[in-house]
Length: 187
Image (tube, rainbow, N blue to C red; front, side):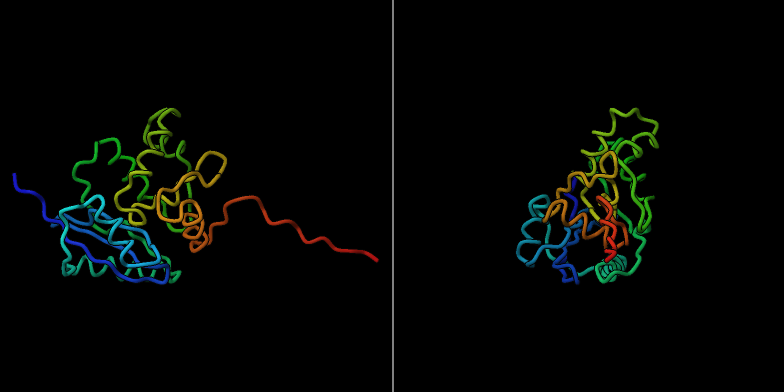
């Protein structure tokens, strides 16, 4: 069987340099922003060693334009971007499909997502594993999946959970304790 050809592009957004890789079937990898094109490329190629720089297809050009608008704060729905999850196990594919239904500005928890898939609470850990291994972060919006009690939870992207918080804030989601109320002073 012939090795699948992956092409990639590194591009700049308001959030930093992103990377996208694709096959004939769709997006195979997405690298969330880092501060330099070199570090983004290194992270992207760590998992796609045979990928070559390429000229984006019209569908990939649309995805890149949507990512740029996303990091400028525009509400973007990535659910129609074709993805190629070849090599992922069936349960992870189900988890990713469920995560793709979480819309802009909304969040869920690992446990709720597991329950939605008809799995017990013990599957929350599997959901967390799937999110940690998400090959197309943002397009599969793993940043919208939180730990129990609305806590941020882990985030394996550059910048860790602070990147997750920045992306959620971009979508108008506040995570964490409420801001203290302003005290009035009576003299």
